[in-house]
Image 1 (cartoon, rainbow, N blue to C red):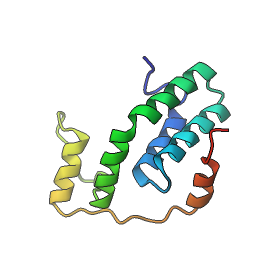
Image 2: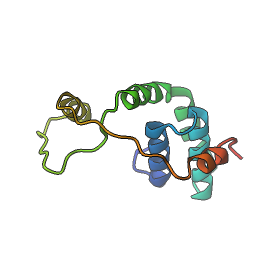
Image 3: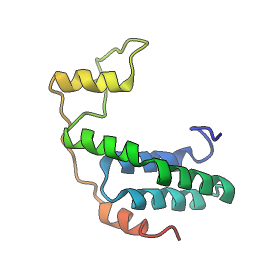
Image 4: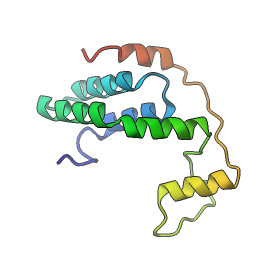
Length: 122
């Protein structure tokens, strides 16, 4: 099992951001993760394992993010919000949504170039 905070964590942050914002398709986001891991020097066995896992099983996360994105769910916790110790991120989002906190999407300045770079894994 691979740790979620391994030596590829910065590459995973980019991937997670692309999954949330969805400026390009899922396969492109997965390819960008792979290419980022190559550039970061992640070993071949580890990057292949991670790539195949997200490529094969990441569809549920992609679809859930798409639904929340379409509904303008917020991804940010207000500065004055103090969550309970047991509170899950989904609970925080639901509370903000009920209280009419909606996120306005901003254009990603380099989205076209970023997505173009992920057209292939090479």
